[in-house]
Image 1: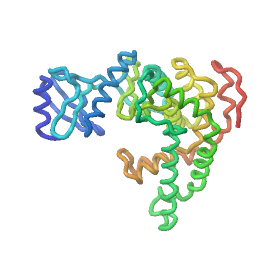
Image 2: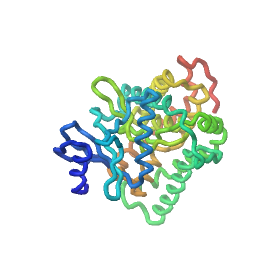
Image 3: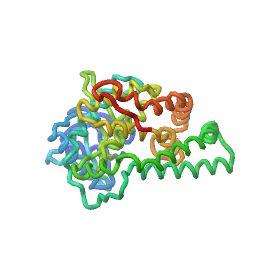
Image 4: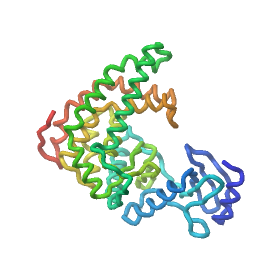
Length: 342
């Protein structure tokens, strides 16, 4: 952090900074006005977007999200040198744990409340409908990258334990990924896309457990609005369910309870629930971690990725059973009977 930034903040926000501590891609400030989080952006438009979005969500009733602090002039964006800084109040909470079904249900409820509020945002002209969701484009790119990676490992031979696992799993991962992408046109995604455009819906698009903070009072906050954009909201549910199911040993009961928790707040039709279950056939946990590591994306490290892919391998039979048991989703209320279409 630039040494001159802190004195500039103290002057602009009329506070005293007693300490600075790095945390992920932000910094924690200890001030005489409380604990704050400071985050810098290269682009002014991004800083404007997140601050205005947070205000809009609050006005729509979703208060369990980040709260930006204004400077003495009432501005929520603080320009300094070549960056645009925002300051948020620290949320005193613990990151959600996907191994805890209680935490999972709280995050599902919070995501549902966010989705209810994240509607009515005009779609910009730059947001073009191309016939399929951005999720499928991302998955196609991820699968293509993984295919190139496996070819490289095959040519050079595995250089470590992770590459041995990649080489061993490559055929199955590629097959599952390709099958889902090839059959995606059978899923009712086009109506979801048109509905998202009509309603002006936003999706968070990074519903990792560390973006949900649970407080001692039982409140759950959804943070990090940087990734929010116009999209179908089912992509968030697919991402959330994929991540939590791995830590829940792919138990169908966990999926049903989490989806019920969400649907009790933001109603899901049988078709939407079935679509989420079908999209979980894409091996996203494995592909996301491996491609994230090799493309050197922030937050991906060898040890963590190795642990996750080994866990996926250990739970392979559980995962397959979950995918084969789609009809069990609708055997309990509130969804009633449902005839599974394979």
